[in-house]
Structures are given as C-alpha cells and as structure tokens.
Picture 1 (tube, rainbow, N blue to C red):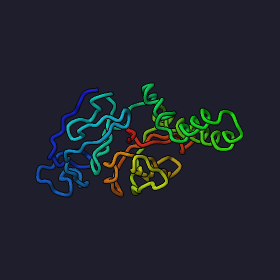
Picture 2: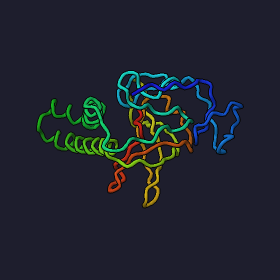
Picture 3: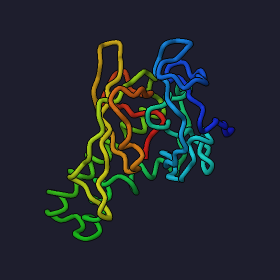
Length: 218
C-alpha cells in the first residue's frame, strides 16, 4: 500500500475531508465539524509498529491501514470482503495477544490435563478462542457500516507493566437497528477519542457480536 502524505496543520472536515484553510469549526463545503491534523504517533493495529499518522495512512512496516487520528475523519471505507489477514496477525489475535488463551496455555504447561486445568484453564481457553475467532471473522468477511464512539474508559481489571488498557465503547448501524459493543486498546492515543467520533465497523450480519473497529486498534 502506498503512503499518503497529509499536511500536518491542514484543517479538514470530518465528514467530507475537504480542506478548510480558514480553520473554521464548521466545514465551508458541507457544514460538518472540522478537525486539525496534528503530528500524532500511534501504533499500527496489525503489527504494533509506531507511525506518524499525520504523515501516512498506511503502516510503514506491514502496509496495513492505520487507525485515524482521534477526532479526525475515519478514513476510507473498508475494502470488499474477503480481506487478507496476515498469518502473523492471526497468531497475535488467537494466541500471543489473547490473554485468556495464553492463561489456558500456561495452565496446560504447568498443571497438564488435571482437574485444576479443567476447572480454570479450559473455560478460559474456550472463551478466548471464540472471542478471537469472532474478531478475525469480522475483519476478514464482515460487512462495513458506520459507527460512532460512545466513550473511552480505563479497564482496571487488567494491568501489565503498571499500565491498564482502555475500553473503546461504540455502537454501529445494522439493518435491524443499532448494536453496542466495546474493544480493548493499549495505545494511550486512544484515550483521546471522544464521544461522537465517527468510525468504521465490520460485522457479521448473522451474529452482531462478531464485529470489530476497522482498521483494528492496538
């Protein structure tokens, strides 16, 4: 994928992405809100590499589309399904970054197929596996739709290296109504996402729980 250069101080409309040189808070073309493109560094949701999001739209390491700058236009509509997901990303979602599956693996290595593993390890393994499969299914085959962020909170139930992840709460439109969900993010940039910010969501029309923000966040 090719990099897209964006002027770091260019005010752009969140709705139609048209530049507004006078930096008004309302777009001169369509009346939508205008956001200033500032020099943000964020992590690629696919591989975890750091990128200057104001300078490029695709990751410099893996080429995957990057999340938008908080408060800016959500970017291009997700590509037509089926979408290519790298094998490395599959392993991250299903094992290395899947906390519940990782705990299940640890219980297997430490306790083997014992009663303790059956009581604790197996349920966590199953929950983590199903959660990962739903995410991958949505990213690969899901229908694209418009979404909106409701709020971003801190998940105090998890802690790694004295850091808590954030939970991005959002809802999205489906033919049957509006569905609400949340996703986890560790990159502190996402704490700055505010209520009403527009996003893309991909989802399974037969199982709305199988959904994910597009592109994924880290």
